[in-house]
Length: 298
Image 1 (cartoon, rainbow, N blue to C red):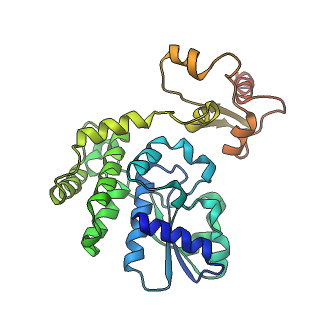
Image 2 (spheres, one colour):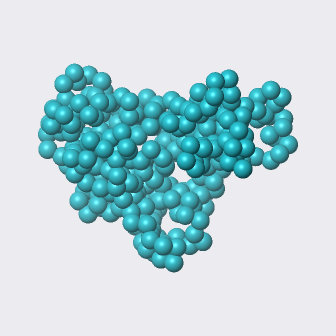
């Protein structure tokens, strides 16, 4: 996998004129499931596509925002996959490739393109997106990683190495954790068992889950501003927009470490760059802008 990512990035950087390009891209949420699925499916396409087609996994975020995704960064670092091998959205001109008739797109983890990429819809040739059922039917839910894994097992099972199995297994387990379900679905259990039987030396599930839980809410390596922006949510009601950020830590730590005196406020420009269309008055911070929005909404 590492060799494939390095080779793909190198070809993209070297080629002044690309011929045929098949891009695999996930949603802007860049969750672990969609990202691992994006890497893996692009790797699979690279092995089975005809010569002359450049298969590229593309992260649907700017490179500067990758620090926010701590759990994703952790598992990739554990697998020795360098961030320098990643291709981020601003590093490839998909619109130009589409205008030249050279682009094919596989969507992972979503069945729609981002609003700024709507003109690329004609280039979409495949969608890998698990159907989300109601909570009553949670046993039927799947992850993008399990769908990708099933296709590879059917079409090219020799491509599944122990390292790739480790990556996909961690992704499937993390998806289950985010569903807040007490029990892994039957379909997910079936695909996990296939990997564990094929590779008995994989770490115990409990160890993987414990590590993922620790990293899910970790702010290690982030600045105060990045920590506030990492899980930023925006609520809107007409012209009123309110930014809400979640930081997981005890109150004493927040007083001493994260928010020493004078550092409570996040720069409004950083907020606006993450939330296009959200405007704060000049000279205000995100917190001030949020408070004023709340006061107007009373």
